[in-house]
Image 1 (tube, rainbow over the protein chains, first blue to last red):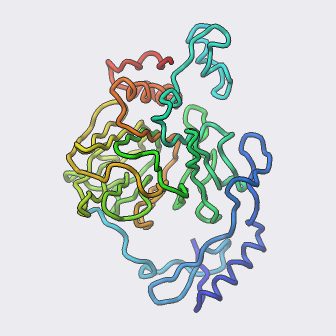
Image 2 (image 1 turned 180 degrees about the vertical axis):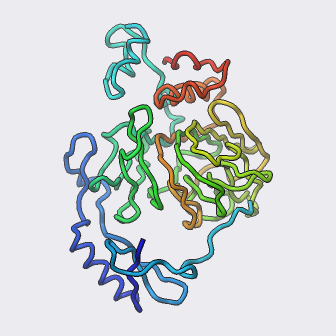
Image 3 (image 1 turned 135 degrees about the vertical axis):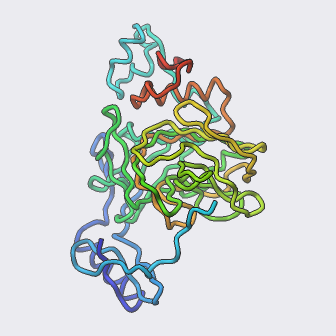
Length: 83
Length: 277
């Protein structure tokens, strides 16, 4: 999985909005049984919410091969199996 | 109509579950619990699934309480029908999350959870969860893979009412292989009890806040860091600890529906036939 990386949150938000527009992911869902549109159900609102990584930059999951692999030090520490 | 013939009808055939219309038996379903039903998610019921392509944006609650789980972010939506159990659709989570938008306020004190899951997890280093409260506050819980008594286990764990991490209660020991099974846990003022495929596995006196004051999430742990990649078939929460009779009916219903009846122990009342209403 690759990520697109930005210096500021606004740059990331703008880029994510463009990705969502380009791939057409913002849309009303359809019922799995009938195939009918369901505007009263959860709409897919965006591609991904940009997240801030440990060094202060902002990233979101790339929809294609453009971008970089996640660094080991990007995310907050996970919860380990200590009870 | 004989029960055997009712069972041959497709899952979504109206008389499979209510044979009374043709003079037959009515099979037991979770809605027989009435007001005790807090949340009921059934991946086999396509009418309750809203899709964004092949991904799930909403999975409707069948309890009547409107506690649907949903996801508006495309990259976090699980996949529908990429894995089947007993020819029934499941929802596959791979670093994905669905959650309720409000707490299960119907659960005022005690509660129970019963569900069917399929997953493969090998020697995890983190507590990867498939179900959790959406905060890490005191009295909240999660169901995950972690170490219990020196063995990796599918477990129920969380922080007790004092904010301390409790000793996890095992649901299934050493799950290094693919697991498909019926999970059950109950929470009341005496602690937690867990069962797997109709057999009680573990118990503890860990005291959680009885009741559910925060929303619940599928696919990840309380701190939204540890995902358990798994196929979710069905989840049922009730507003009380099930009686032995109702717990066995729930296990029988799930076992026969999802093709797991062979996993029930000898002597289980629904080992040979599904429960009827």
